[in-house]
Figure 1 (tube, rainbow, N blue to C red):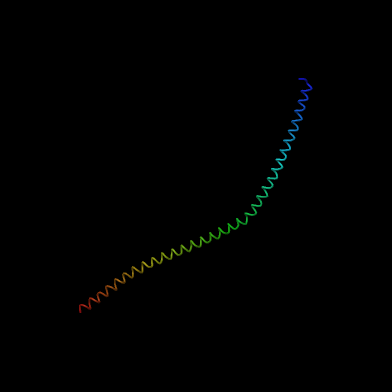
Figure 2: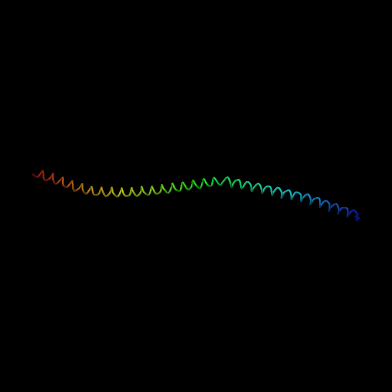
Length: 120
């Protein structure tokens, strides 16, 4: 091969490489621009979601607080009812045991009266 055709081939290769690099550069710039737009849109979407979620989270927090207070009041009322039922059951056992002792004394008295009446 002679030098002229070699230089011509190398020149063509250089220009083709330059054009290829320019095309690739343009596509890289376009990709970076589209990526920048995508990030901007994602940021706007995240901000919109955050603004929309704040009232929902506030409502959920308030609801949980109300439910927590309700559970605490219910628990205290159940404990109070439990204490009252325990006291009532102890009182009922005490009354029944004393009344059974009193009933025994009364029955003994009645039987002794009946026995003394029949002896006369």
